[in-house]
Image (cartoon, rainbow, N blue to C red; front, side):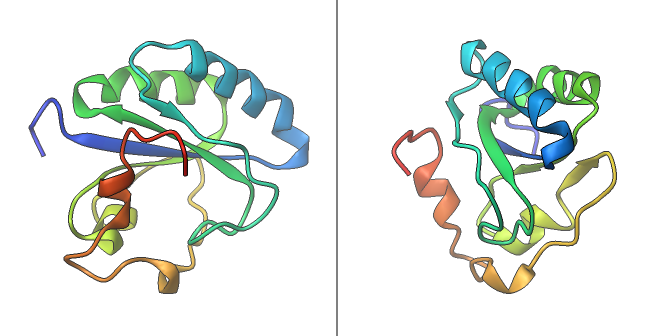
Length: 125
């Protein structure tokens, strides 16, 4: 870490009870020029994420800006860098905002292979 242009993700979690807040935050991210990609809202589990979520992509230089928007929303999120170690990204290197969600770590790429890096900033996945 420390490279201001390094790729980062935030996974924003939501339930039906806070769907409106998640939609409002997502709409704000979609209009924010520092956000490189705003993903679709899932309706259930996706990869290691056991509950509905969506992701946003940004660069490390904008980490505090993104964190502040998430904190203000009151939603739970996992914010993490994209390195060659998908497991570490979602655990040791990840930063939780709100109560952590138990992830299904069995779905993550093995160390040295992180498919998220190749997709970073791409809007068609």
